[in-house]
Image 1 (tube, helix red, strand yellow):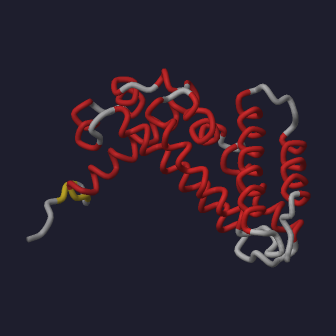
Image 2 (tube, one colour):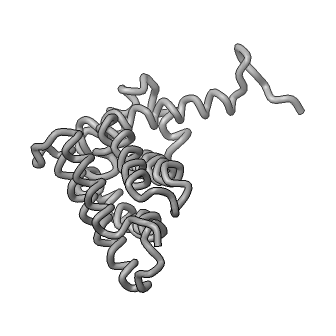
Length: 200
């Protein structure tokens, strides 16, 4: 059976396109106005879609917000993986690449930074998920630490680094850390290198 199409697109294509519109609208609202700005009505208005199409794609507001968060978190995780493919390369280059990739994603597009780091502190739909994702980011850092460190030391160092970096970026995005983008980047690179982000 052939799929019905209209103007060269199938029903599934149009549904997928509407889902993307809703996700983009939610990213804009959550990333600029915070949790309070995101409601089903507000998202539909931003996306220029009716509520019928919202419920075609999402059960409720919480499911949409979580989908936006998961997408941004996935982008951040992949950016870090892609930035440092070789754990035995030059340490300064690796640290700079990791920080640069993260900064490019969440500082140059501060909406994504606010979704990833600020929204979980105010939106109950995201708080548990935000905590649950921290070990995945700690694992990325742990893989870059020297093998001469004991497993416990590697775990403690990686967890501490993720906590410190998250606090720094949260302060920067929230406006409580009054430094330049270059100062933030340089400090984070130095923090990683000093903590043992170097070949074994």
